Length: 474
Length: 62
Image (cartoon, rainbow over all chains, first blue to last red; front, side, top):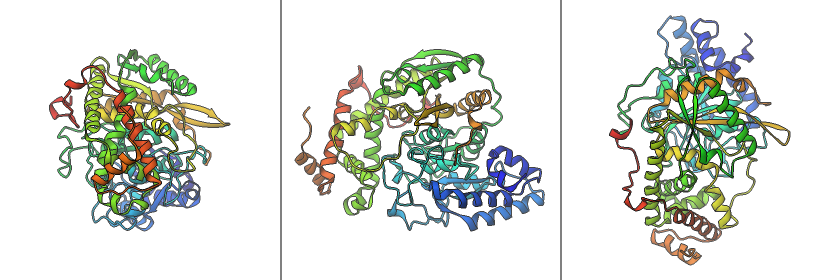
């Protein structure tokens, strides 16, 4: 196999070739670094490339293979992480100039676990400033969508979407507070899993909202997503809210079985007036395919789903503003303008409204749990539309514009952050916009710790279709 | 309820040690009023009886 072809392998396939010594970790790492050099000037998916450290780790990984050592799950696999995760000795900016010089002296638990599994850290990926989702200015370069460079790769794990879709890493980590893993997965034609809150440690992950943040995989295939989750999942004494539950073998669960499963189709999502007609058609076709594979479809209702975006925004605004209080007072002009607006809003949101948002959150969670008591999984569009054009100017011109930002598509993902349940986006087709084919995703959500079932159903669907085999024109 | 004015918003900022000036003041007023309006409009049955819990207690997780 030519070295230049290596980045196009799945992480699972690359791992198999490394184990049989047909490919060396060094070759694979060099191939990715060369591709980053050649393409990332168009995408700006990386903030920092860890070239020397990656090559050093790859040589060590190669020697371990040659010595016949026991190899980890991701041995020799080049990965990258959103620049929200601490990386020992490598700056971690959060997508902000405010942290331009922050160099952690330890790895985030998720990064440490990927390395312990044998993964090679290629670098740190671009993101919306402090993962709040509304930023327009990206101080390390505007990230672009590989399917159409004029479009957004998705917020806030923008680089995780762009780099993974453009084959600039084998798999990646994003972080999801209101949809920030699933939105880039939707926009870039990837598999993105927001794990059950408490399944993956938040230690060493720059916080946006303590009660909704969680890191998870952004990968090209369901199997790669399962492998990546396997490496990072599980209790961590550094994060008191990680659950002490056994971590199943996610890859072993990828058996294609969906027969007999009951999928709840969320009517407030499928019939939403803000849903793009092509997206609705693609998702309906995917649901029909799953029915053809043996699942049964049941229409279910989450009446408060349309309110989820505003509730998510209220909680995120207050929790993130509380984290940034000192800098909001003293260094406001160093934030992206839109981030500054959101942080100021969160700083002064009346307590009774925040309390009401928390009450609404609890009711939303009860509605989600009630329907999950009657079906195995929920199914709905991941986003109301394919990747939008990149914004050109910050700022709000009216209250109505602000309302629009807090409604619509963000309800489709935010509802599951509020409920603390796992949710995944898997490519389910392409829609045509201005002569460009843009990917869209089917979202599946499940009960707490049903992450494996999400992967199982997504895998069955993926194997039945070929969406994941298409390559962006970059 | 009526929208908050820019003066109201400026006062709320001052209460938490933030002196808000333009262009932030106008846009924060839009943003806060939009969020306030959306939250005030959501009044599902049972809302007043709910005890808000930010995360799921362990015994309810499964």
